[in-house]
Length: 248
Image (cartoon, rainbow, N blue to C red; front, side, top):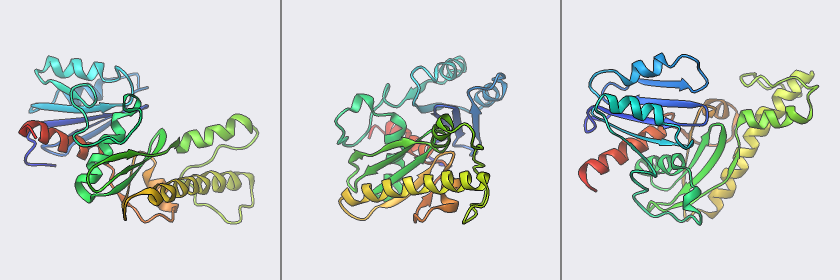
């Protein structure tokens, strides 16, 4: 949490969750957008003491309900890419198609580590490069762990579904173990190759920062030397809110 951000709420709207964090007491809520009951999210947004809110979203109009609820409480929601943009240089050919979560996470990593490669293990897996001077240079987008598994299931329906938290057995001696090893270590191998290719075009040594819902599963099995920052997007949003507050 940050003493320079009293009453700040940050919101990260992904494909399947709305992840909220308060920066006065550190309280955090990850809300499944498929849930039938919005009460937990509404209760979180209605807690007293909120003064300002910043957010990013990968879904167009995905924050409409949150924005309406905050507005009713007198709190304006500023959204990355709509109300403010990246504060430094975008070296990206199609900025209009760049998801704000990618550059917000990269900004958060750069604030802490300088040149960074950010691996976000969400519904999709993104690997983004930000240089030491804060230039965002983009990076690969690949399937997330569930999409990786779903792609195989779509063409091989007779195989069992992988257990994402299984301990890989080598050599696997059952169909279940074989799928578990193939999906879990295959996903790790994909991420490791993408990071290596991105590091090869960086302008110097870079810190690898891992975030997202499947980050812990990746880090249990990968060969990558990486820093796990579960609240990376929230850190980036908080840093951006502080810049906005001081007119930087």
